[in-house]
Image 1 (cartoon, helix red, strand yellow):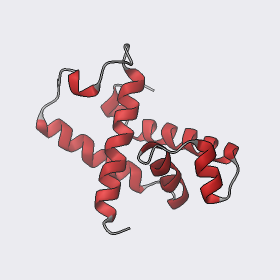
Image 2 (tube, rainbow, N blue to C red):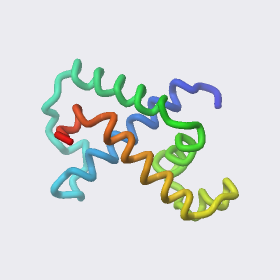
Image 3 (cartoon, helix red, strand yellow):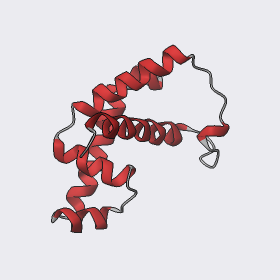
Image 4 (cartoon, helix red, strand yellow):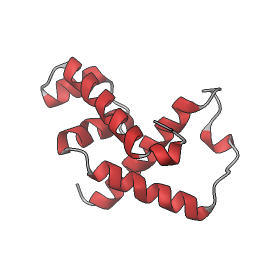
Length: 112
């Protein structure tokens, strides 16, 4: 990987988009069309928090997360590529998303 910072930044952006989309009441609305209620300072802080949360992931979790949400590969494709079971990929994706959701709860409005 040529630029780890760019990789993590892109992964952070995609992770945040995934979480935001999952919370929208109308999943067909593109994020670009949604009104922005945050200041630039809030978004900078969120980006930093995303980068920090992603840096806490194990290398394997980060790899699977990136393949799934950045590269857009299916769980089956990832499993074949990495030589692991499809179930392991699914569990890793689920746990990674849960961990990111927990780490970013204050930015997502979660009270849990």
